[in-house]
Image (cartoon, rainbow, N blue to C red):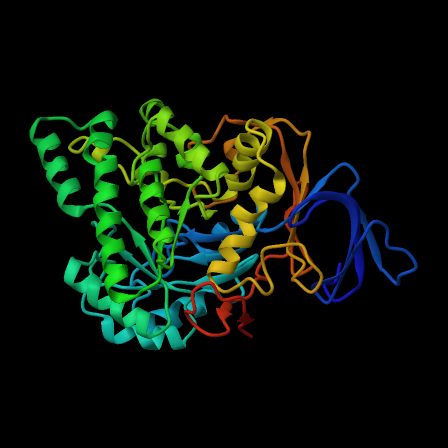
Length: 473
């Protein structure tokens, strides 16, 4: 089906801004042109029957690591975007690490642009990075259309000379001043490096290298200390902030208090902090290792309470893949020696439907805002992405609601087929994904339009909360 033809999705249960209604959706030139109870008398070249199925806005995943350049053997644009499309995602933003060189210079950005072109199944944006010694590159990266900047307050790990590095307090303050002056937005991995390094050294000195010991070396207090420090710097510099992968309800509350004081700050959490516990990490092993680590079942429910109350801005996968051999307990480092990162891009939507909608009764419009509308709006994609509305890109996911199945390794389209969710039972399945009206994925055929994704860049770089953007040619 040509994306430029007029066609209709008929009779689906369409998730709109405040309701779910049985509707027809007309699409032409990749845009939604009409939404009605019944559309008739058109010149539609094709009608897709969606009776009994759910039609949602495609997921907008603003936090993935596809590891180009030079780490495509961990993941790459082709395989990573395929997994995202299979999970109902129609737009994503690739982080400035773990590829090497990281996206912290204009040359590195141009290199990544070339690698992505013609290889992504769905639309994508690119992050820039804030690292020591590269403040002079921030303006060039902003002018070249990075979606925002990312920094670490603790050691990000990784391999090779020139890898992404954390910033100290003075560097962070100066970087925030620069980014604020650019009208930009800074995202932070917030854990206290001093605390996590000290606790790790103590655990290793005591001969503790097990999963439970790892969790103890990255406590909630490390997250809280870093969040509080970053909020103070944001208040001082006026820099808009976004906190990635917040794992504790206490940190959500700190950020919510800052919002009440007028700070321009948002936060995301990830499906693994809503669905997997510390006990799961111990049971599953390194496939469930991440930083911050998984928390207790009690804290998980606290996160759900805050999500339902609207204190969590949106959901992102933090897809952080690696070769399966790196997801293993090592002889010298034990659990600490395994790579930390959850490979979950393909499961975000189904996890939120299962745990949010089916088990906890969270309305589908609220979940759609968390998965699509709010991330699109915060990062400048809201004029075209993130909701089902006339004039928006026809970025749609069709969901079969009564399709119970267990996730199998062979179902995964990412490069390395490991995931902490293998064996998990889902009640729903993704039937089809459309990006700008083009069929990208079906459950029967897999990826049917490889390489059709386009790069997204902001209309006015780094105006936090903006609603306009352009698509790069």
